[in-house]
Amino acid sequence: MAISDPYYDEVIGDLRNSLGATSSEELRQLEPQVVFANELELESLVIPRTNDLEELLLLHKQLFKGVYDWAGQIRTVDIKKSQDNAEFFLIVNKINDAARYVFGELAKENYLKNLDVRAFVERLAYYYDQLNFIHPFREGNGRVQRLFWSRVSKDAGYEIDWSATVGNENDEASRAAAEDMDLSKLIRMFTRIVKSLS
Image (tube, rainbow, N blue to C red; front, side):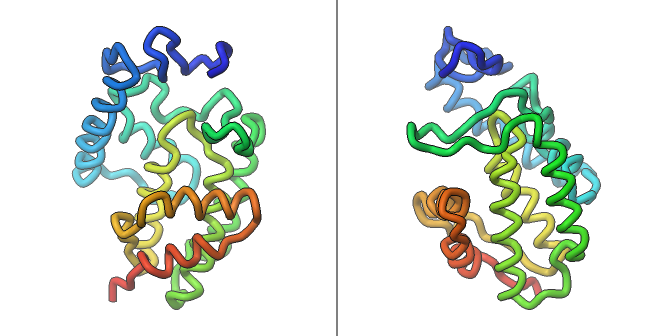
């Protein structure tokens, strides 16, 4: 990890955190527990369905409060997946403009409402890939994105059973979409895990 990464704590060899974790192993053990409790709190909170970057920021802030002091803030460093040959996500100074564009396009499609399941899955895969490439946070993008798309899906009359994904299916499908511009794996995944609420 680069020394210039302001999120990184060299002493523990992992992200700077508010949990008092003194090692990477301790952080990886504590973080999911706190995030799970924070997610349960969402049921009693009212985070507006603005379907945009603002909603994403509020969801991230709720999920990672007490874990990272930068919860709910757009990252300030360029990042990529941990693999040596992985592509970088969108550069920092393009995040706001790209998010404005993607969420604007989503609004033009009425947030995927009134679509049959096939069309819904195809458009969901497209927007999922777009938002994944923006990757606005230093950590927690996947978890926030799953929560965000579950909310969008529910409002459109569908539900996503994320627990039905198999192994690294989501990561592999996302990587194929990002690096090969191939949405087919995401579409197959969503076809299996998206169900109509009616």
